[in-house]
Length: 113
Image 1 (spheres, rainbow, N blue to C red):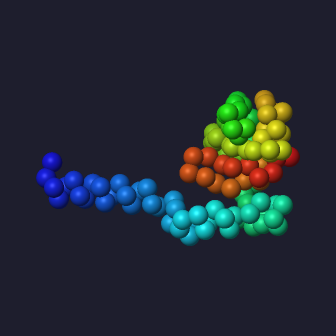
Image 2 (cartoon, rainbow, N blue to C red; image 1 turned 90 degrees about the vertical axis):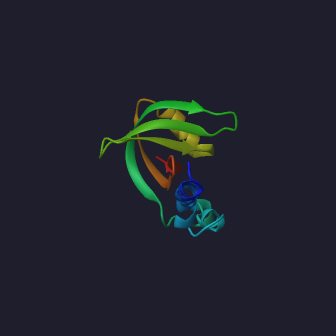
């Protein structure tokens, strides 16, 4: 592979990897600015009603629920910690309303009801 083609491929790969970080203001600033309801930061939350199809818990206590959006029929991974994760676990094969923030690989549940 010619050197110029290799550099072009590396540049394109770097742009793809940087795109999500730049979308939220760059670096950790976007993540730190996104506060949960306990800090009074409900702005930017999206809501959806989902059917919980499958639930698993990793070693660090994060719950991953494989869900189907009732309105669109799309399937998505919903991640939750603490009370939100517990409610996702209890809702297996049921429907819940989720207030979430969109991630690169699914949703992060802030509130589950």
